[in-house]
Amino acid sequence: MLTCCTKDGETIYLPTPGEEQPAATPLVTVIYGPDGLGDRSYNDLIYKGVEAAAKKYGLRTLQLAPESEEQGLTYLETMFSQMESATDTVRRLFVTPSPLYDAFIRKNNKRLEKNPNADLLYMETTKPLEGKGSTLYIDYYGAMYMGGCLSHAIQDGVVTLILANPYTQTVVEAGEGFEAGFNDSSNYHVKNEVVLHKRYLSYEPVGGFTIADTTATRIINEEEAYLKVIDYLMIVPVCGGSMHSFIRSLWQTLGGGDYYFGIDGDMTADRRFCALSILKRIDTVMIDYIGMWLQGTMPKHQTLGLKDDATDVVLGYVAEDVPTNEVDSLRQVAIRKEGERYGK
Image (cartoon, rainbow, N blue to C red; front, side):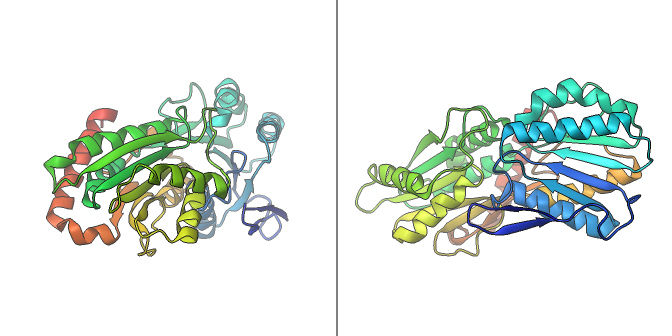
């Protein structure tokens, strides 16, 4: 039994392949980036989706949470080496959701061609692989465009878009979508006097996805300094697990004028602070993809988004200020803009 822990000390148990099922059962192995599991957003949704697919299809799973980039690359090299020399007929799917391994994957994926029973799914890239393996990209542009427009439904104040770093493709394009929607918002509903600030948590590639709560509190205090007496602060944290540091900081201070957008999962049950949630349904996408892999129909590449229900927007208290018909109209505009951007 392999285990790993989240930043909050919660233990995630990873079942040992073959412990309860025959060794001939197909195996899905996921190799996350460092500090990936335990983020209670994107990576944990992948974990949830893979385990749901295993239950649905009767599979074995191995979900690996390396402590460093070096350890993750060691896992990948071990897997690829084993597949080159394997003589059994067990079907295996390797899933890599971290751009940290991009160079290794693109250099080594052809090694899997020696084994007809091994396949690869590399996620969150718009660039297909040359050689064996499929790629998948879930674009946030349309859903974040909606979020940018709807941010004007809050009272006058500051909207702070917090991005993990300026290098991760999904983060950058989410930010671009939000900014575009923010600038177009006057076309869809009453526009309050809202100012947009954009901040990066890190200038390292794949950095910024974990921060200390004290750092989040400092950033919130700095942004509050821009507010007038009756203004509101809205935090939009596109930064993986770092989002929860901001949420905890809001709860600890109980500030009357501070709110946030939930990212990846539905957090609108937090009626006190969550204005709306922007969803990335990677858990259900994983179930679908593993099913296609088993049937031999996994596409070479797909880009999924708002039109495909891979992303969505769920309104929290902000729904009181935005008519349903305007939200529906905005959704169609966002789908069109997303389609134009990705040629869909």
